[in-house]
Length: 372
Ligand SMILES: [Ca+2]
Ligand SMILES: [Ca+2]
Ligand SMILES: [Ca+2]
Figure 1: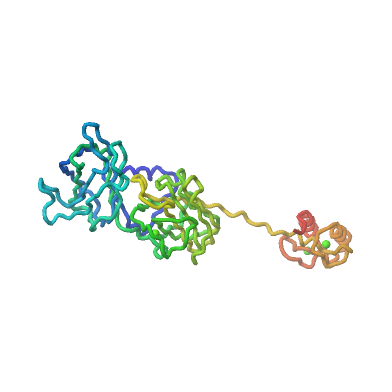
Figure 2: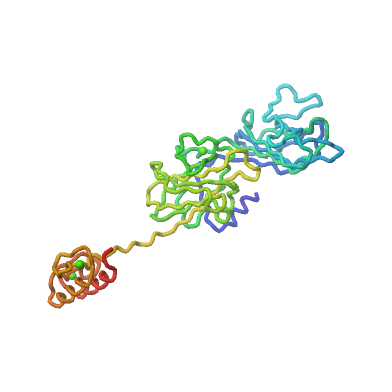
């Protein structure tokens, strides 16, 4: 709910993307006092959308009072399809997760945040009962504060460059892509075009501009507020996989990449995480902001067309625009000598066989530019 209201207040146009089937469910955080006795709460499975979830992240802010003498490596949890009895889980219970000690929970009696990340033992389909059971071993007490449970569907559809998500041509700029849950994206990038930094959990987009211009794709905080992954790397690739732009450190540890893109050409844009290992539970979504910068029209250098004679004052030119050309033009203009015919009546095109005021103006402009 919070996310959708945030989207509606954003100034940048939100792009509707097709085929974004990846999702996540985050259970509202809560605090419990844990003991050696297992205690169980329902995760309101009936409220979880009926998607197939394959991975999880669980975190708690662990602490224990002196008289409880808990140690952080004694924190445990289970995610199951039914509640345990005094004797344990009934036969036939589906155990989606049975945690060991948190990887970052070296035995410690001081407060710390614990984080578990991993794959569910089997797919959990939302809408069906699901329970969280907690315990503090070995028989002492602790407080599990800000208990957060996040379930993620399997790898996003655009996990590889073979199946990029199409970014529709924005109707206005700047534009932003919808937030994309990224925890389920593969940590392997085998077979993908290389980024400029090692990357994990890459996702891929295809962008086909309707107008040739410079386009910028970025994850910087101000431009892409729904991107909460703090170490990102982004890159733009040509349709043949040539890397056109890449960065992992444009705005702090986030990215902004810019490339000239031709209208009608489908470019690949990738975003990934630039550090390996567990994600903090607050980091789970990529978002790209897209801006367009018109390419200023290039004014052709006409200076060399003022080169009408060589240093001896004779045509043709000598590759340089010098005083000789100036003198030759003015000596010959009044009598309409053909070396003074430099352009047409519009003063833009090729010589037209006539020596007129247009040629005069053209010569002065060309002479002032000179031949590089
Ligand atoms: Ca990937
Ligand atoms: Ca010359
Ligand atoms: Ca002319």
